[in-house]
Length: 354
Image (cartoon, rainbow, N blue to C red; front, side, top):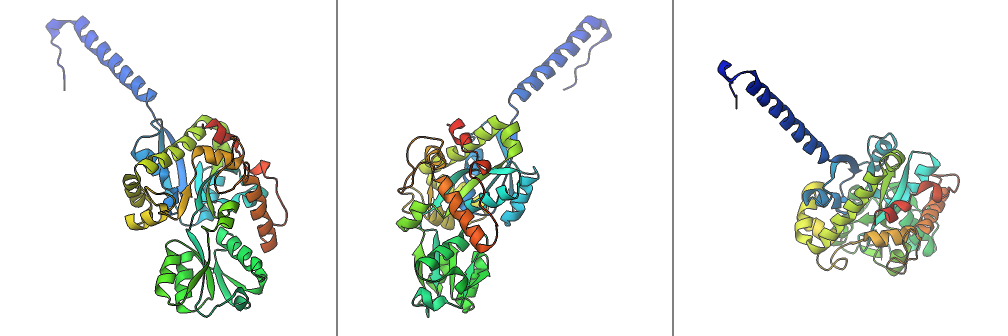
């Protein structure tokens, strides 16, 4: 709207309009700045277990923050972006912490986020009757990932050294296809790929599943939250708000699983049916394949909050998990030494977020 001021009105009225407009614009600018949101750059690969910040954003559970998401299917590339301050937070599997610390990549493991609760299987070909039958045969794993460690542990618990099989580096989808074509004899597969093989390859079977008490107690198959050192030092209050938002998204999902699963499916590109199968819903975790930690339980696992986490885990078990993965990386030849747990983690952030 244009306001015209006649000559007869005089300069006083004209000036009044100008000043009123000026101060009005200043008031709007001040109000806008007071409600300006801090942008937090989030990275992850496509997986429903990383979808809870989308829920928090959609439901305005963290009104002071705006989350800017980058989805890249290569975790190494995600960690490279985190290391070079192009991302603030990355969701990934938990095992990369010791390697990042050994290489001084400039970020830390902050928290466990969820636990495999039936999400992962070691599946064998129909002609494999015992672990010993795998000696000299090809076995698919994601090298440098939790599937690599799970397979190594299972083999050695069943009398086969990890290097007595031919470890083939394949992502789960490719491993499932190779399994059904007969190119490999066994694979560690996460949902939905393990179920696809069991359903479509007659005679195939699961010889170990992450819902077994030993895997739950060890917390081997777990996702985690990583944050850059710059983010947690220069913007610590924003980092704590980000942690709060993640777990607020989890709590909203617990109470509203159908709505939250719809949000997550749309965000990560999975079907609602697959998200429901992986995350579960009203009867979590028994109707899904993951167990979601609460903020308190995550703090207990890290050792910064009193009390014990679930499944027979102990307070501060994050350090045990760190050492377990570090030992396997040395055994596999990915690392040449053990690194200090305290130098690669920031468990205090969980306590500050409560």
